[in-house]
Image 1 (cartoon, rainbow, N blue to C red):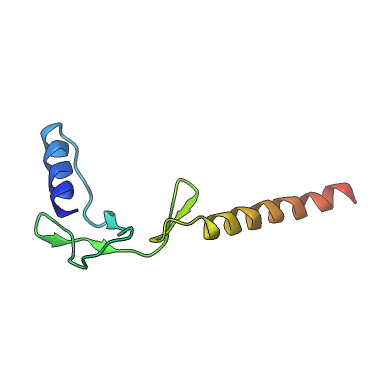
Image 2 (image 1 turned 180 degrees about the horizontal axis):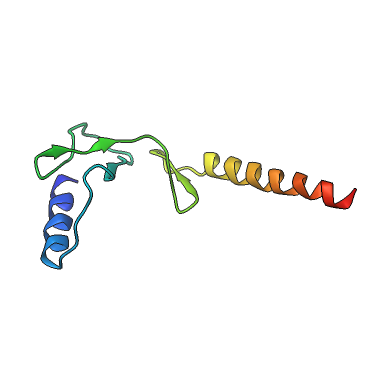
Length: 86
């Protein structure tokens, strides 16, 4: 994963793209080694589940949390319609 991160950083720099190290996070999916990932000699933050484009992504690759969150949002929207119908 470190090699891929370095490769992406090199290609990004070659076309003028800058990465914000403070916003760059690492989610290890079924990873066996626990070594930290670095970018320009700074260790990137490891995260547990996070939300990306409205979907919850976790380290197991499951969708349980995402489905529950989406059902909760739909329920909230539906209950707001109740005021319109009464």
